[in-house]
Length: 446
RNA sequence: GCGGACGUAGCUCAGUCGGUAGAGCGCCAGGUUGUGGUCCUGGAUGUCGCGGGUUCAAUCCCCGUCGUUCGCCCCA
Image 1 (tube, rainbow, N blue to C red):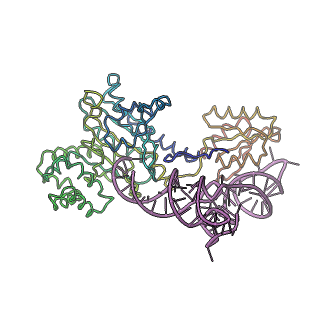
Image 2: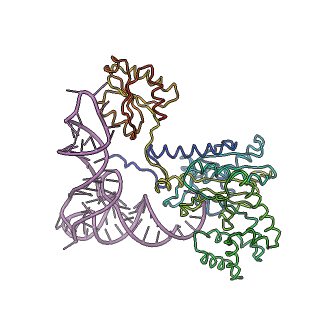
């Protein structure tokens, strides 16, 4: 009895047409990152457990997969290794470990899979890709880098062409100052920011109630806070507030906003939004979220921010950074489902050489090599299946062109190029053997 | 981690008030021994998610389990 084949729950495994589309998406992201000079980094899927878990508190730890050798299991030892649950913690370890070999400000990108032991649900995977870019400074990092990241993201999503999108930016110094100006202590900030982050997903009135619940001392303050955050020009409102932290955050936010515009991001796609708080409390300054205008329900498809000290657990050096991350797996699967991403098959091969007559197989190989020599992807159909079957294969594979050469063509000194594309006006072209490559190239650009 | 819904062919789903199952699409073959995507004809495929219980008899009722899915928590 064979074992029922099945994928483990919570993974996205694709058939080739979708895999090609996904790969293209990652390629675009990679190109976008490299255009700004970021350097590639890869780290292992697993880390030494205590190194990985230093930074994290209860919530994350519950989601970590531990890796254990069979020997250690037999001895009842605690697992030494654990799978990474994001790329930021491995980056901190990487930078701390290789500090003296890196060139600061260190600009790295990393596109790899991460693992989380979550209860699986739609759009929540246990294995998924993150595409991270971060800039790490030594001792300090100019604010100009905070402005560069949205520009990179803008470039990437413009090229991905998933439709109109908006990058929303905010500043946590400003938010904290704002909460202080309300007289609220630092210990309550995280809880309030967490509720504030719901704006946009949850009705304003409800958010007011939730904040009032966390901060019951001042019931009307919650409403005032939400009104301020939702104001059409919140920075102008904040100018009226005389508070040092608010002033500092406001100045940073303005500088980042203007810096990003200067890098060519249109102001229609970059918005200051004081409701963007981000759940993660290690962000200390600028924070980002990105939304597709036509699909607000997806939530943020790309987010990040500034952190004052990346690797405090691993080194005494002060390493501030700013980074942003695209959750590629979730984004891809959701866009695929909504038909934003074309699921139509495209073949990797541009040309398929058919086997019309077995004795000519060496000629087929020669033609394929010739075509590959010009940079084309070429496949040869081996074997003596009927032509109909070979063409059916070509059709399903969505190969644009098939090459036919039998004794009939050979005697006439020609090669037949069959155009299999839907919109082809001329289906078959007889060209002389010497013109094959040129003819194929001409057909492919048409 | 908590609560609800669902689980029948490769896919989408129908069905049986309890008597071991069907459609469409897809797949394979032929019509077309040098021509795919259209058309016509024929064909194959299911331990009715898994385990247990009730029953003469369970795909159907009950319990458990696994999986999927929706909401909450959290997050990409």
